[in-house]
Length: 312
Ligand SMILES: O=P(O)(O)O[C@@H]1[C@@H](OP(=O)(O)O)[C@H](OP(=O)(O)O)[C@H](O)[C@H](OP(=O)(O)O)[C@H]1OP(=O)(O)O
Ligand SMILES: Nc1ncnc2c1ncn2[C@@H]1O[C@H](COP(=O)(O)OP(=O)(O)O)[C@@H](O)[C@H]1O
Image (cartoon, rainbow, N blue to C red; front, side, top):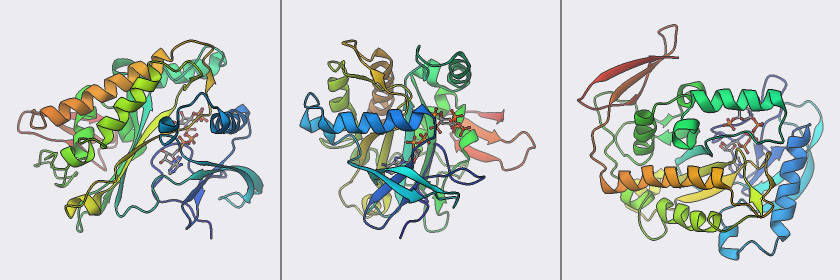
């Protein structure tokens, strides 16, 4: 039985006449192929990657397993269309915390159309991409029994300042309420989720060492998806935190050239996460994110230091 995933945090969502991803109970994620060349490029990437003997085995685990393509009824009931059949990397986790981080200071690439480059450039400039080499595209995190799941509106996370990005990365590994303005993120889960020999930092470092060498692909506009089951870690169990690369709709050939854009963004993300592990208590700024109509105020960051209001 196929259903719409409630754990999707970014990208094209179903609805308004647009098909979105589907999942099943066996741990598969079905991503509709986009009509234009984006669908064809992503399908070609997965096909090439799956059989490319130049990709080391230990690197394959950072990509969702690819099970080919399948014609399915679209999630919006419009018509049958081909879907990529992928491993659902969130499946099997209780209270999954998920963050999509789009890597690269530029999400456009020279071969794209002028119009596309311009749109991407604007998003890169307004978001943290140009400044930091990555941006948070979307996230969900489990707060508590009372507060439930925190899934800030995507437009609220798109244009975060550097401080806000740091705070969101801290909230991702904190056990106190992500929405309480009087609480600093306690980072109490940082060592189990980000740290350790198999934590997120170790995985990102392993990926980085591949990107220092690999010249096969340029992963334009691709994301790092960070996932872990919060319930288990809160109960003191070992973390099942995983890093996966997703979204290959804009991959181009590397032609023997290092993917500097991806590598630079990855190094920057690594630095932020390392700093949270080494100095989790470093003071953060109190930030209220507010819609322009002054409604739906949402608090992303907190400390005793100062208060900033950002109108979106
Ligand atoms: O269509 P939208 O407005 O959801 O924009 C998509 C973006 O969503 P956003 O609104 O920035 O969260 C979306 O960004 P995320 O994956 O959500 O970070 C992509 O940039 C997508 O472009 P493409 O499919 O990669 O070429 C963007 O799609 P296109 O506008 O290029 O179709
Ligand atoms: N294999 C997967 N398993 C689980 N969730 C996924 C997977 N691939 C994508 N997602 C979810 O869907 C979102 C959008 O995916 P993405 O491939 O970036 O789509 P788009 O091309 O529409 O931007 C991601 O942010 C993530 O939440």
